[in-house]
Structure formats: structure tokens, C-alpha cells
Length: 125
Image (cartoon, rainbow, N blue to C red; front, side, top):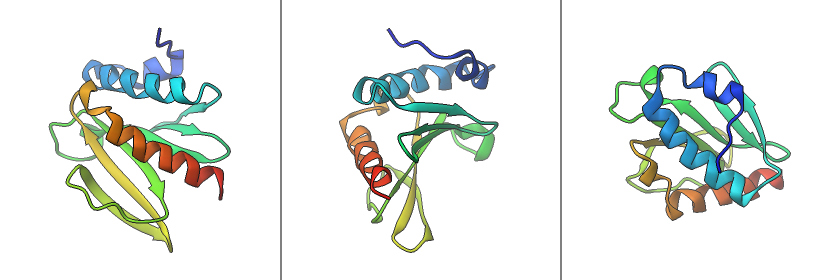
């Protein structure tokens, strides 16, 4: 069962479509890393080990899109894939990737592989 905190639930107040996608994402992350820390902030939810490795945000609040949820993660290299909405290099050899999700099915092995790589990258900073 995927149990969310009250803060997580309140983050999605009025965005039930995004909540459904987030529940799939959070469920996969918590199943893989049961000790993950979750911090709900004003504009995003951060998943962290020692450092943040994945961030969920409401896509429609930031950009004009039909996607409901955005997921961001950092890697030492830039990924070249059509699923990547945007990639920026805020620091040398630190690429932040943004992926837009429209359904829970978008939380798949490819996305979780990228998040695994981000988890590993953040654990070795």
C-alpha cells in the first residue's frame, strides 16, 4: 500500500490527476529505497538520500502543457532522449533533466533507471 504523508496529500490539493501519477512515482521510489527522505516544499517534493536525487512538481503550474506532473533529477552527463523535456547544466558536469508525465504508466523502467542513476550520483557527491 502506498501511504502518503498529509503534507504530500496537501501538495496535490485540487490536482488529483497529478496525485495519481505521483503515487505511482513515490511508490516505486519508496519500494526501491525504503529509507528515502521526502521533503514537501512550496513548489516541489524532494526525494533524498544524503542529497536530493529526484524532485516532483506540478507541471501545469510552471509551464503550458497537458502533462500533469514533472520529475527532475541530476546526472553527471546529459541524456539525449525525446522523453527529456529539458536538460540544463547549472554546474560543470551536473545536468538537471526534466521529464513530463501524463499518466501513471509513464513511471516505467526507463524513468526509474534514470532515477536510479540520479540516486547513485547524489550518493557519491
